[in-house]
Length: 284
Image (cartoon, rainbow, N blue to C red; front, side, top):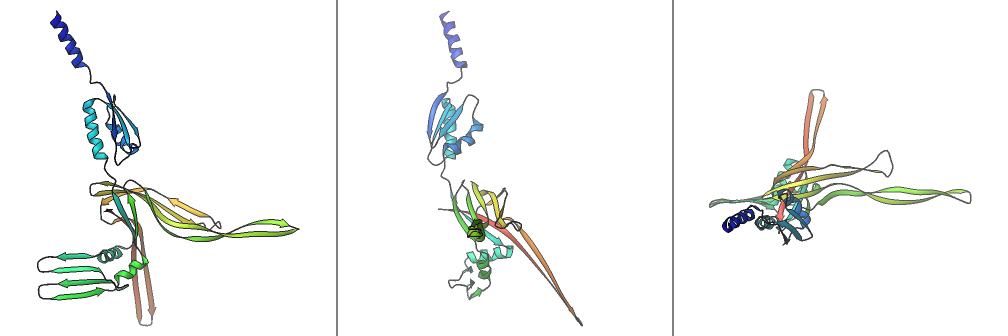
């Protein structure tokens, strides 16, 4: 009888689930507010996860605590530092930008290099060195477009948003009309408002892939109301490879010109496409 009682007690203990315990997990790089939303969908109904700042409070059995700790250690990595570059121009301009940045090919018999010349406005130097000959030259036109369409750069931390903008300050008149000794007087002043075009960018990394949340913003003067500024914004998400230029969108312009006269006819056609390009690179 005593043996039967012991067996029944053992069976009852074995059938009971493991008791939940509280565990405090210290974070080093990411905050609890960043980690909790990632882990919440993975919790069992009898488990809970909370926290604040750089501490997590986990309620789960010992085996699950070990699993969740392993996940936290993988998620709690230091956020990468990224350099965001933005360029506006045609694909041809972008190729010129690539040459201007410097390219080199080298093997046992050949050494081909392209890169920026040190003197201002000199363009790009190109060198070819073979086994029995050496040639150098310059491409004069590559920098002219870069001066009109500069590359804007912004250094930000992964997971945070940064803003890149271009624009100018527009003066506008404001004043008050009041009466003094029967006369109408005007008290005037000139103020300035910033009219800008730009966008917020928030990068996220997954290996060598980058996802960019883009929120463009454009301010423009309202032609119907003096001093008023219209603001437009939108949000989109794009992805690509680190170090690769990604097109955001752009415009295409086509112009035709014709000239006719006695015994002659001239016709020309110009087409120009301009896009906004963005690139994300890891920096130390």
